[in-house]
Amino acid sequence: MAYPYRHPSETRVLSERFGDPRARTLEGWREQGGYRALAKALELGPAEVIDTVKSSGLRGRGGAGFPTGVKWSFMPREKSGTHYLLINADESEPGAFKDRELIRWTPHQLLEGALIGAFAIRAEHVYVYIRGEFFEPTQILARAVEEVYEAGIAGADVMGSGVSIDVTLHCGAGAYICGEETALMNSLEGRRGQPRVKPPFPAAVGAFGRPTTVNNVETLCAIPHVVTNGGDWYRQWGTEKSPGTKLFNMSGHLVRRGNFELPLGFNLKELLYDVCGGVPNGRSLKAVIPGGSSVPILSAGEIDIPMHYEGVAEAGSMLGTASVIVMDDSTNIVKQVRRIVDFYAHESCGQCTPCREGTTWLAKIMLRIERGRGTMDDLDTLVQLGKNMIGTTICVLSDSAAAPILSSLEKFRDDYLALIPEAVAAASVADTVAATVQV
Image (tube, rainbow, N blue to C red; front, side, top):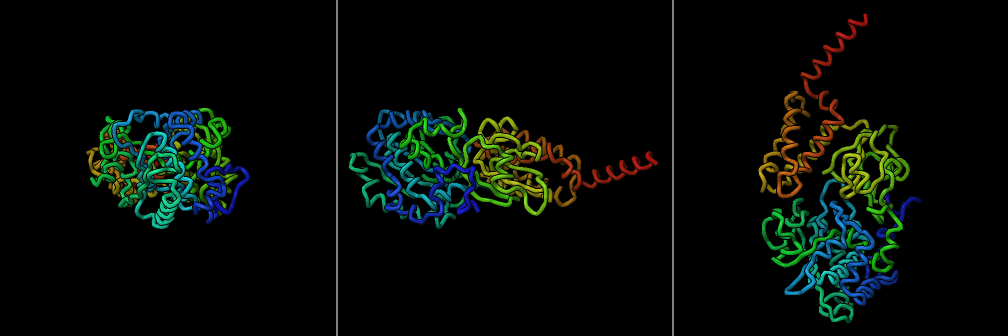
């Protein structure tokens, strides 16, 4: 629905050529000025490229929102061996589907941003860690890699500059945890995909023991535009702390779903009702998950907020990947949260006890409640378990499982009570007493 449909509020920078098959080819990308940003970067030099990206305020689009230019500046300036740039294309969080679309339609936009990034951090090798199930995007990107080698844009002498940057595609085996940057590095090295304890951080000791930066697909796709037009140009959109545009992945009970590119700070309520046409079939809004399945849920009364990192945090949730999941009033919140927890229980790598045991027990208790066999004590156990899982593991997978449960218990407790026999019985007695008093 998002393309060829175009809403007047959209500001298409990264998605301008979605739906145009020629943008997939080197020739088609060059017709629109492709790879001029790389040529400009090679003239500027690594330090000035990093300063430009810093001035833009571009924040990582993988979910954490860390400033990209600052991240690049952590890499050592003195060369004493190989540096690596890893592209995290293992997009697999429920609700997220932007990175695969960027690769499907504009693979050269990603490669140009990656080559600029590699040059800036003095990396000789770019690895694209792409999810194995992304068959079509992988084929498209593989062809684009062949084209840049054939044209001398990648390889031993990038555009005649004397700079050497190789690009390798690496297909993952479909493990959600490998989207975490240190688990990604372990997987790339042929190890089990489990997160590493930090420090040391990747910029000091990363892939193959060498300095490494990991960037998200959408982040790198913004780089050619920033280098071509400058930091101030990019800051014309968004806010002081959250500049630029963002791809919002809209799914669930909406008239119009898909990817919409809008300035950061766009109002969530306007996004749902104006851009996406509101809730279909005459139903009303019940709940929204604003940043992918791993963040706290918002109720219908909490959506009049700006969609930037600070605005969503003030509302008690997170922008994350800006993957917005919308639920109408027919939704069984317990069932939906149970499905989310099932996902995280299945995808836990099992390395940390709070995650390995916690996600499994959360899933079992949620299923018991959903099937009408839960107790009031189960609700207390869910809260206790969830709180003990947050911030106690190497990565944030256990936090991701706990957040939807804790927020749904706080905001949609009636949905849980309606499935617990003792709560239903107590409510029935209370209603009878109230009716008797009135008579």
